[in-house]
Image (cartoon, rainbow, N blue to C red; front, top):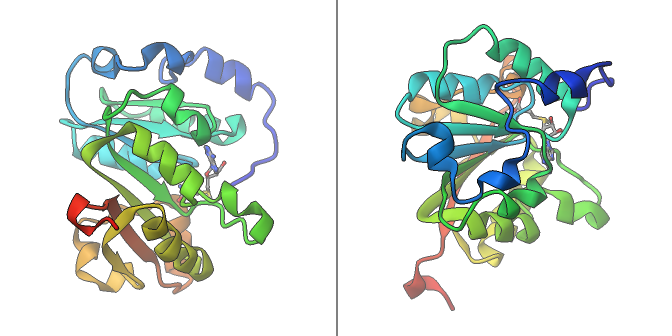
Length: 218
Ligand code: SAM
């Protein structure tokens, strides 16, 4: 998602109480930031944030952080956030490749990747959020039983991810090529992009990845 630059977006983000301004200062201290030691779940590329704010409202006993690298996009999320009574969610305007500087090993329970940019050209494959480079970043911060959940309407990106994730040493513990007509639909929370694609009748793919158990590693 790339909105036209909105004047004042950086300033609004820099003064927002909902945004963590110097996230690297909190590495290993996120329980203090939230004031409890509840599990911490992150959405990478939250866009306007519908998904993560709905999760935060439904799960007050889980802490949430939404990451979005474009200020104009994050600003839309902040405007929505202002109307909600939530105590368990913050946002950050960062690039996900820097997450290992921000979270200590094992500090994160779950990572959500929703409708990530497909980067269809081979030479841009490293930018895909399910590439081995990004999986290595997630490996540095996820708890031992932690998981990565990925949803997309983009079949070539999904097929790439189904191959690249196991090659990076992870196990696909569940997947579907038609989320909304599968048992996984029961606790599904829709994102902005998902609502649009679903209304156009496009099937949504989803996978869950966990670290490969030692007995399955080569
Ligand atoms: N997750 C939302 C949804 O499903 O409605 C937004 C999907 S949009 C296609 C992808 C978003 O991910 C964009 O807003 C983009 O700026 C953000 N994004 C892509 N790569 C990122 C990265 N490396 N770090 C942080 N955000 C990223």
